[in-house]
Length: 179
Image (cartoon, rainbow, N blue to C red; front, side, top):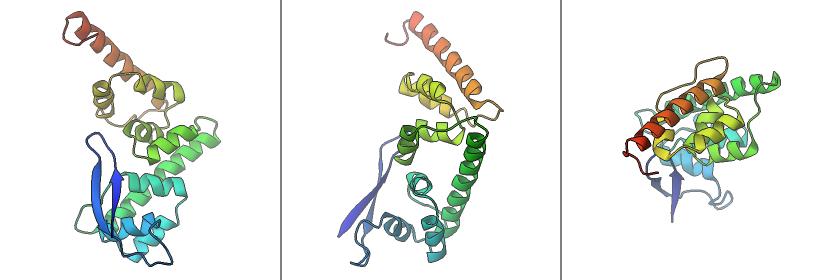
């Protein structure tokens, strides 16, 4: 029996065929087991993934297939990364600075790159919406500029968005982009 694990990113969805060797008692719905076995990760890293809250498990798996010489180390690195990002987001939320919307959390878990970026950098809802309002090409350009390292990441993102909007307006004025 074959199952597909999919993860989306900027390009086409990545489909990784996996031969299901899940015991009947667990069932084919054991996405974590299938994910770990398809990557060749060991039981310790699988247990570490299972120990995470569901939304963080989804963020780890949303990064797509695991490639590398030591899949267990790669998986544990992803787990540490989402735990650290979650810790920073929780600290910001506790301070009243930012609490991600459930829709953003769900979209990030489903692999939406804009939602993942906004969650990673604790961007507020208005900045996320402004980013989504841009054409996909400009969204990608902004995301590719890298991390938002500042005390107010939403302000940095809005600055990038304004620059992109200015560029878009200029290109339209010159007739290089359809209106």
